[in-house]
Image 1 (cartoon, rainbow, N blue to C red):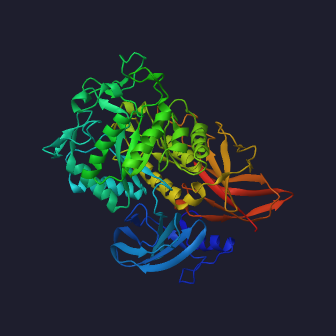
Image 2: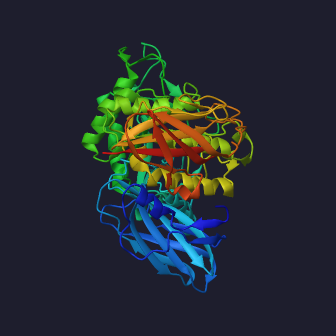
Image 3: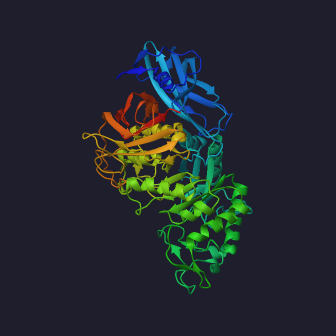
Amino acid sequence: MAGTIAIGAAVMVASACGKAPDPVESPPENEEIQKVSLLKELSTDKAAYWPGEAVRFQLKFKQASPGGTVNIRYLHLNRIIKEERLQAEGDKLVWSWEPPMEEGQGYLAEVVYERDGKGDQINIAVDVSSDWGKFPRYGYVADFQSMSTGEMSRVIERLNRFHINGIQFYDWQYKHQEPIRLEEGRPAAEWKDIANRSVSFDTVRDYIGLAHNHGMKAMNYNLLYGAYTDAEQDGVSREWGLFKSPGGADQDKHPLPDDWASDIDLYDPSNPDWQNYLIGKESRTFEWLPFDGWHVDQLGDRGELWTHDGKSVNLAATYPLFLNAAKERLDVDYVMNAVGQFGQELIAREAPVKFLYTEVWGNHPHYRNLKEVIDENSRYSGNRLNTVLAAYMNYHLSDSPGMFNTPGILLTDAVIFASGGSHLELGENMLSKEYFPHKNLSVSPELEEQLIKYYDFLVAYQNLLRDHPKESSLKAEGTEEIAVSDQAEQGKVWSFSKYKDGKEIMHFINFTDASTMDWNDAHGTQSEPEERRNVSVSVKTDRPISNIWFASPDQNGGSPQALPFSQQDGVVEWELPVLKYWDMAVIEYWE
């Protein structure tokens, strides 16, 4: 009901699936309160928690409260784990909760504040996972000039609110072949990066510490085969190089702008001498800086290549060789970029990576291609590794200052998240180009708020979205008014389904008003979809259904809601209460 909060909704969901909430004091199920804006923000102290670790919440009020009640429900999917009621005083409330001990679980905390017959609700998700690679949510930092603790803390605390559990430290190093500039055997206080921007050693070190304080992993960025053109003076031999012709005269290189420090010459990742050299430099890096792992970059398909002595090189096949050699000598976490999927199959099958990472380019231009990449990665790894996509939004719009286009961002995130992936997009700002410090576009307050809800949804329902569900053949059908298709088509709702632990997980992504089916919305022209209400859906199944429930990052902070349905003659029918960008409906069968 518009303008009210149905504070018994979660209890109704729990009852619908036969699960009763814990016997703790709770408000009457049918009570409704007038909805007003009373709450400022809700946060947790970490991006992820180990089993047995307490979660510390902080709720801020818009004004100092003379009293009132805060009702909290902790849910796993659509089942209530615990309920509690706290008294509010002052301008904030801090409390702790100990989740169940199960490993790799996502939860949603629903927080309802009531005062004088008025109320407000705010939700937040919690990830309980000891292994960050199980449900990776990857962010970045790319500015390392001398900074105050407060400046760095604001960046990390923002990423923490999005539950970012791993951070790529992009272009922090002095040179690719000399990551840390040393003076008299110790790290220099400052140096210039490849774009001649200032880097402070203390800033890099302190950022790592702040990330660790919030349960995040810090990943050290570097290519596996790159060095400056002056690398020979640092002990690199040209004979280790990759060459564009068999004669050893034309070394492959990646050209960079004239005002940058250097172009990048390329070296053979399978060459033992190059491996020993670069891995040794990285080993020294980990001695001076407490990074958790190495984010290994590449530059995509380089065409035909040869060694200095004229042997043909299968570049993709060299990647696992290098990564396994690095892992044996330097036992840290590894993530490797597959540019346009180049080398991904071998990385997935043979390399010691925490998850799969694809930088998506023009060979995968459409929304459907994002799901195809994620599905392909799952097949490559035997349904073992999850995927992060580096997919740069509003690419040409960002040639000039402006704002990110909210509909384009949310539709792309909806496709990635529903498909089981996550999106490398958040850092000091938000990514629009492959050069991470590029910041022409700003994130509007509206988009920031909606993105928080999307990342909460990704975490709260990670066991349905990313805990290796299998593809399902169940297909949804719509009506003449709102067409539903199992293909990503302009003018229709795209629906696909997965299966996990006796549940059919059905996704509905709204392209009915889409002006483009290109995911990167390069010029920021993607249209905002019209909100549709009471969207009729049906599926064909003879299996007896016990329950259907609904959740959406666009509605009620992602809270689950039980749905009425009918089943007869092998057809199940129900209505999605509202569809904006992305809805999820979960069908549960009688056992």
